Image (cartoon, rainbow, N blue to C red; front, side, top):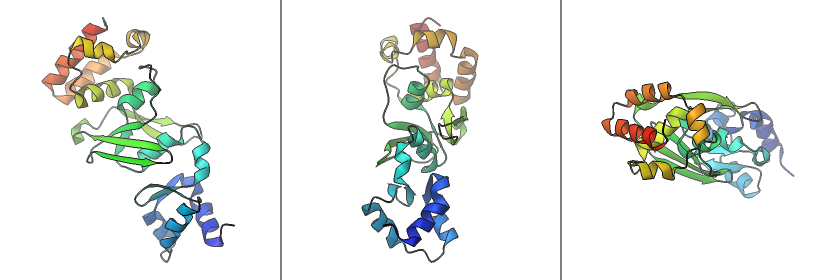
Length: 208
């Protein structure tokens, strides 16, 4: 049976979704940090990364894992394979959550999944928007155009038509939904000749 201190913590922070030790100390400066280890062992808390926790009942929310991605490593937004799969641009169902961040490359694994963060320059931290999750929480997602450019920029192996076609990008989406004007505008902001070449290769490969 959870004790009163756990119940108080849960009542305070369940609406936060996930929370960190500093938020708890602001709420209760005398909070015993040993509680975290004990409650994780008892299955009353889920450790997300050092200093970050969530409540296990949130595992039942299908897309809560995406919300976690934007909370435990800031600033960041979901991009790359995860965003491309979310938009239906690639056929694979992606289980790991991939994001980009201005912080150093990092990876965390917890009960909600594996979270990978790739580093980009501060000036390339754009092209994202808030998207609502199933429980009305929001998280930052790359636009389809930015997710595609992030992938080509961070994975230089996509450098010829065969490699582009190996992505198996949905041709209907590419032809009817992808915003080519935005794609080119975003690409110009990278200031990368190599990316410009890859983008032209992609456009040629898919006949856009």
